[in-house]
Structure formats: C-alpha cells, structure tokens
Length: 289
Image (cartoon, rainbow, N blue to C red; front, side, top):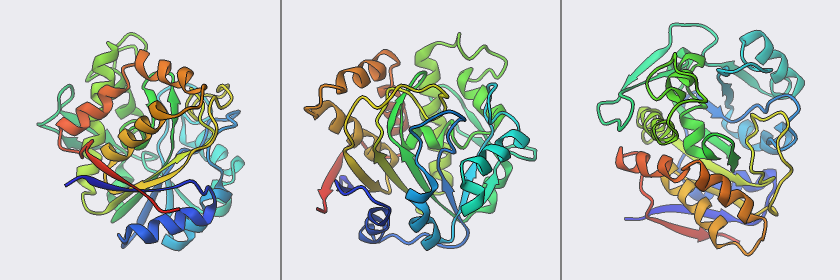
C-alpha cells in the first residue's frame, strides 16, 4: 500500500494542527518536537510563532543536538544561548539531547555504509516524536528534510562526525566520499525512525526554500516561492514527495535547488533509507484544500 501524505497550500500555524488532526495519528506520552533551532544569522529557519500552536497542543518539548563544527551551536552553553536568542526556550520546554553523555548507540546490521549510529542520551526519555522539517537545500547533503532531521539532526556531536566520516569520526568531514556520506545519512535516519516506529510523525514545510540549510549563517535567500505543508508517518515518502513537487514545479528557481540536490547526490539518502526499511517512496498525495 502506498504511504499516505496529506498536503495543503495554506501555510499558517493552524494548518499544522489541521494536518495533524486529519492524519488521525495521536502522539502519546512525553513528546519530543525535533526541529532546527537555526544557526545565528540564518534568516530562513522556521520561527517559534509558526509552530507554537502544534507544540502547545502536544505539550511537546523542543529537542536539538549540538553541532560538529564551530559556530553558535557547537557547545551546550552556546546552543542554550542561541535557543534563548531565537525564542525557543522563551516559548517552550527545550532539551539538548546530547548535553550529557554517554551517547546512545543504535546497532544497524542492515546499514549500507555504517552499522551503528550515535544519538543524544536524552532521546530515550521520550515516548513519541514529531519531526517538523523546513524543506530546503543543503550544502553537503543536497537537501534537508525529514531524513536529515532524523540522521544529522538527532545525532550527537560525536554522532554527526561519525556520519560525516561515513563510519570514521576522525575523518575530515569535507574529505569524505560524497556517496558514502549521504548513504550514511540514510542509514542513520533509519535507526531513529525504527526506534520510534509507530510513534513518530513527520511534517515538511515547503517555505523559504533556499539552496542552503538553516545551519548556514549566511544562507542564500529563497530561490522558489512558498509551496505548502505536508504530513505523513513515512519519512521516505514525505521527502520523495517534496522532491517530486520541486521537479514538477513551474517555478524557474527550481533549477538552482535541483542542481544543489543532484550535485550532492541527495537522492541517495532516500534510496538508502528505503532499502534499509525506513519507509517507501511509493506514496499517495492527498490535497486537503
């Protein structure tokens, strides 16, 4: 059966709640809200006001992990300051999953490139998860969506180095084989999805669509007009749907994004995750407007 994805062109805080209610899957217990806190200087990341209604409905906790590169989020102290500066800790409960060790190691015998994934210890404190992704390009992964949030997003600082090094945390992340790196992302994403299997939902927001990620302090301005919001229980399907929407768009700005995706072999993230059993690229897109 194809995975169901619900789509709306109406981009508003209440639309997120409406999509969640239409999906009909209720997240229970202590709910983690995985999103991108936005690097200092970035202008494209999703703002707290946009997600406040859905987070309040779920009584969720915004969760993040520290980065593996120098910036405003590479230590817990600096990351907490940014979370405050960007309004996250002002509006919500927040939790840096890898603030304290040891990391949790997920074994992945099915992995195509890596056989283990390292995530923040606090991840185990949550019963379910809502992944809210700002869909856009990415300088290293090609694109950023649900699978990127699961992989690099949920990995500890060490885990990020491990993924970037395709299994060698000591590898210079800028010298790793591109194919091995994005394959590692697909592997890592699968481990987190399987951990929360049946207790995780994905929302992709196709707004402020730049060729760069929210981790870039000097990200390019959006290259495409806003498209809409999607929700699914399948991270492979929802990312594939977003790519298909981009490729089928009549917006001329799509060429910049497609070049970014293809030059970084972004499609391999989806292909790997699907081969690992994370989800299916076969989907049904249901327009609720």
